Amino acid sequence: MEFAELIKTPRVDGVVLHRPFMPTVEGTLCLTGHHLILSSRQDNTEELWLLHSNIDSIEKRFLGSLGTIIVKCKDLRMIQLDIPGMEECLNIGSSIEALSTLDSVSLMYPYFYRPMFEVIEDGWNSFLPEDAFKDLESMTEEWRLSEVNRDFRVCTTYPPLVAVPRDVDDDTLRKAASFRHGGRFPVLSYYHKKNGMVMMRAGQPLTGTNGRRCKEDERLINATLRPGKRGYVIDTRTITVAQQAKARGGGFETEANYPQWRRIHKAIERSNVLQDSLIKLVEACNDQSHSMDRWLSKLEASNWQTHVKEILTTACLAAQCIDREGASVLVHGTEGTDSTLQVTSLAQIILDPTCRTIQGFQGLVEREWLQAGHPFAQRCSMSAYSNSKPRHEAPVFLLFLDCVWQILRQFPCSFQFTEQLLVLLFEHAYASQFGTFLGSSAAERLRLSLPEKTVSLWSWVNRPQEIDHLSNPLYEPNSLVIWPSVAPQSLLLWEGVFLRWNRSPRCQEEAHEEMVHIIEYNKELQNKVNSLRRQLAQLETQEPLLQTP
Image (cartoon, rainbow, N blue to C red; front, side):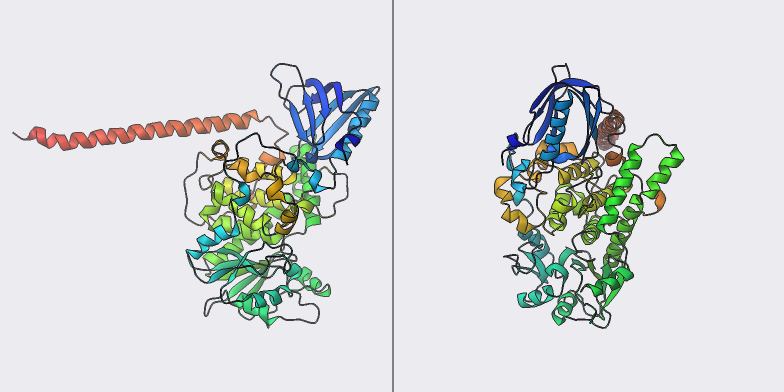
């Protein structure tokens, strides 16, 4: 298929662009295979380059011969285009709708994008499982890297290499995989250096109504326990939902078959509920006609902050079991690709200071989301403005980023990065020129030849100038475990995402500039203090010499 077939009108002059808190711009609108571009000859105006894949929906309005298109984007911004001529407006509208809903992955922009920057480090090779395992090997000899899934036959959503207990052979892993949803047998997610406890993740056990058991699965998770120790299974479903899963062939670990493990149910909502919550939240944030009481009521009715609290509470529980109880943890829900990953990745941010660095956080996203099989292609295909009925879409990754922001806000000096990195990841998960978030598993990315045919987002992020841009000027390395508060008054609306386009960015920019200025001034003063102390010390050593006759 040629893109030209979908573009009925490639260019229109005299188009007026309206954006909140920005001056109106009149110029020429052009449609390419991947971008909507508006350029103007007016002084001091930047071109608008908008990826079609970033467009969630459009709304067309007409007044006489003037047509208006409201473009609603996946990054939650809205722009208005006033287009002279009804036919031109209809053609532009239908072209945008066709270009923003392409089904073929190979037609997407990452396959056509050629970087304008020098690729210093190939991001596709930056966070390989074997490199992460070298760090684990330096701490313990109890684990090994298994190639049981090298052809993706045991589990289609796992990477080719997984960390498992050294004493468990690959045949045991295959049998345990047949007992877990989607073949997602328990694998290592995190090793706590302080006490040797571990966190694993998996899919639900397929016990069914007959109470089926699997001795290989029992042996696999028991192999992670120290002598005389018990472990915790954190199930991210309510006990009712877990019971109902039995009728569909799923289930949970019974105490009779797993006597050394205590099961705890912590309810985290499923994808369809989360998508509805995001739609209500964005609707509330965009509605500025209500009183404060009415606005707060709509905000509360969205239940978004409730979901944030549930996820953070469960992550804190997992971290507490590992760090304070000295117990190993197994986390799963149903598939093990959504709420499970939210909990395991957030628990690591709480426990591991490395995950709070720029490189460490990238590694966490790569390891616990991309390689762990979160279905980005389904979950992020639509955002809050889509007119289509949600099927598999859900803001699972966005909720994780929101939870990270909550922790970052409570511990502003413990993170090497600012919220800009979180916003960047949110944007690129939904629409990007990079191939990192395309596909839903390592197997799919291999089949799509993404490492050979596209550029990695990490190649962009790890350039020195971008690292500087994302770095937190308040950062002071903190090796301690950090315990976030989940009290309602401690959890705030993430304005940097949800109110980003509803307020002028100048206030934040000025605040950031002032903060950097204060920090630089503080460094100057500190250097003066150190210099004066050295001078004083020299004078004190010279004084006895002057007093001797």
